[in-house]
Structures are given as structure tokens and as C-alpha cells.
Image 1 (cartoon, helix red, strand yellow):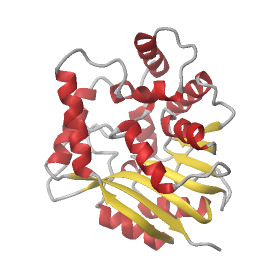
Image 2 (cartoon, helix red, strand yellow; image 1 turned 180 degrees about the vertical axis):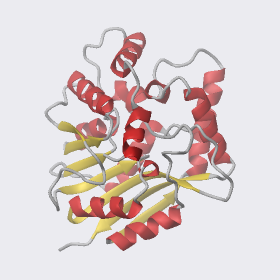
Image 3 (cartoon, helix red, strand yellow; image 1 turned 90 degrees about the vertical axis):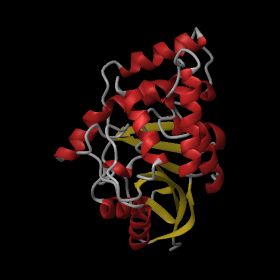
Image 4 (tube, helix red, strand yellow; image 1 turned 60 degrees about the horizontal axis):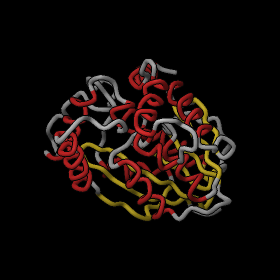
Length: 278
């Protein structure tokens, strides 16, 4: 693993992550017996707009129960659990950060989904899977930590079956002003490799994908963040939320994320792309 990927893995590594999440679940629900995938949604949806964004994109994809699905950058495993439990498909999660993989496995076992999902620690630029393996690859809030966009796009294309789909939910640079750091994915910008949505779209097309849908959700994301901030200001911080998987700088990182979006420095894109049939 090269230096930048080591730095990315280190950025997401939080001491005592499992205990932090499990303690929050106990504060919210008491005993952890009989928890459901939905009970975990507040703690394991490490992306903007949480579970709602996952549901929206999944509906656009149209999953089938016999599909093999790969979640690249699976984090705590929330999306993988949602797809497996809702659609009955088999999901593999791949993440660069060992503590996320361990937490994802623990949470999946907690809700009885261990047999339906598997998690591996690995690199999105050199995935440990054969070509033409997955019916759908899902990637959300990942590529901004990857400098080699062309290699990423080609690797995603390689592991998808002919006729398969790529589902993305990603953060891109917008406008000319410098992005304010720290953000949830980078403290100083050293491990942030932002490009415009237009540039990434072209990279996907060059890799062999056809764009089926390409939707800008920036304003919807700003509205979600604003609502979350308003709710937090009205009382004690919630037990469950994306702050659990961010370090102690979470309030500053989230505030910067809101400002970057609202002031036109960043954009959020949801998309479904297709790989041509053989």
C-alpha cells in the first residue's frame, strides 16, 4: 500500500471504534438483543443523508435477489446490511480500514446477517476479485480519497459482469474556491483528491461505462445537514449519528462540509452506470 493509502486508512482509524458504537447502541436501545438492521441505521450509515440516500439509490438500481453485489469502501457495513436484508442479494464489503471491517462484521453478526454478507480489507485500486464477478458494484463517498481516478474506474469496470451496473453516490469539487478543511474524509487536504463531477463522468465513460442516470443532490444534502444541525442545537446530541465514526473533530468537520456544499465548493452526485453486455 502506498503512502497516501496508508494515510487514508489511518485517517479513518479511531481507537475504540467498536466500543464507541456499541456503547451508543446500548444507550439508545438498552439491551442489544433482537436489534434489527433499521435499529443500526443511525450508527452505520457513514454518508450524507444516511439511510434515506441508500434507499433512494437502491431503488434506482433495481436489485434482484440472485445478484452478487460489491460495496467498495463499505465502512461500518450499513449499506451492505441494508441491501442484503431488503433484496436478499449476497453482498461483499471491501474497505481499506481494518477497524471498519471488524466493526462491520460484528454489527452484521449482531443482526443475524453474517452468512449473507462478507467483509474484506483491501484496496479499491487492486481488488482481490476475478473479472466479471459482480452484478452490481456500489461506491459511496470513496473516490475523493483516491488520486488515480482512471485506475479506479477501470478496476470497477473489470469486476462488474457484462450487463452489470455501477451505483455511485459521491462528493466532487465545484467552483473555484478552495475547499475548507478539515472534512470527514481529510483533515488537511493531503489525502483529498477532488475532481469535478464532469471530469469523473468522463473518466467513467472512458473506462467503458454508459451513464444511465446522473443526478445532482447538492441542495438536498445541504437541507439535510441544516436540519441535522437545527435538531442538535435544540437539545443533547443524539446517541446515534455519523459523529460516531468520525473523531473528536466531528462538529468542525461537519460544519465545514455544510459550508463547502452551501457555498458551492462541493457537489453531491447520485448515479447509475451500466457496463455493456458481452
